[in-house]
Length: 464
Length: 66
Image (cartoon, helix red, strand yellow):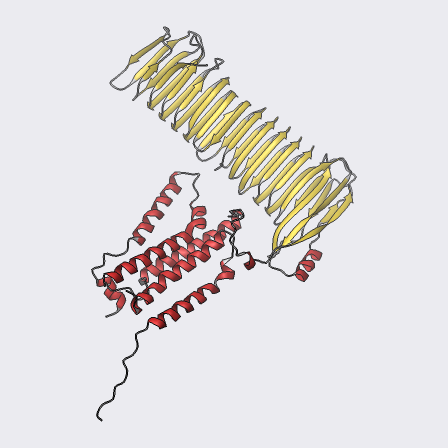
């Protein structure tokens, strides 16, 4: 009898590894569908080898156990079906890893882990990109930078010139080949006759290109357009505008007077500080930090990382699949980390629409309109504030106010209690039906505080 | 406990563990799988060598009357 057939036909109850793998895969795919911040592909790319290792170790233990009980053993340790599942894990895992590396340039660098395998790598060959300089007559030219891969640092300068220099690293090449590649890799700087438009071009990237870091100095009044496939851009001290179009690139900007437009497919990190113009970001991203922005801010595409907004002078609009936010300005700070939105000192009209978010606002002026399907809302109206409308399907609402109660109140919880710790005589509490409660009254002529929650408690308390 | 059937059955899981370790080295940017794949051939050869050690000896030919 075939050993595999004997194994299958034996009294052995079968391995639990494949069902367990299916359950883990199902749970991860379910979380991937429910939680927009969870990226299944990243987990698959990162952890697929562990599935093979754990499966192999478990099977070794099972084989020893079966041998000890004199049960028939599978001929090569696995049945044909199990080899198929293992092959699928391998090919899908390695495919995800390559796709992730290609699309996001993720480096799973765990630091100096001390594993002595570095001899398997040929050290990258570092070479200088020869410095190029040309004079620029115009004070505020348009500088267009086009290349495929690499990081660019772009700085404004008082000198009437365009200058480029940098470092490039070639991988898996010998010394002579690195020298040959370095000779071919030259930056091209060109300006038209009027010098109103200048071009900075780099040769097409080669397979051997490990990394490129380029420093470009432009006249301070210049505007800049950067187009690349993949690479980060840092812009410092520019009076003109900045536009970046990239398949995958981070952006850092500091001390920019013009407008900034970012059109990227994937941005792991965007940091903008000291911007006098408007900021327009389009495309999905990760972390986003904005500080001291004098103009309007528009963000569309959705971010999976942490968001920090500090001192935004004009209107800020944020649009994604799960949240829509609008603020007239943010003199204080707003943070969105995970499922929390914490804000201090907002100016309305403020509109917050989200599927799932705990909202905590400490001080606001103007009107407020909050609608969350799932999440708690805490509002500290320490300076009074304007009219506020709060809707939540599932979650408690806590209002902290100074005394006497400054709002005209209209609140309803369809399934929950009202916890009135203010004990303000102007407020009228009533139980509408069995599980619904209503609050009305308050300061006549005051801004309307309109609260409705389907399932949750309403708590009124004294603010600090 | 050690016998030729067990040693032969261990070949698959040990190859899978080796492949997993090589994949892990690739994921952690320690060594690319495109460079380290010959380790799989070496591991397979070593396992086959161990199998030969446990292969049951064929019964010796005995003499007899013709």
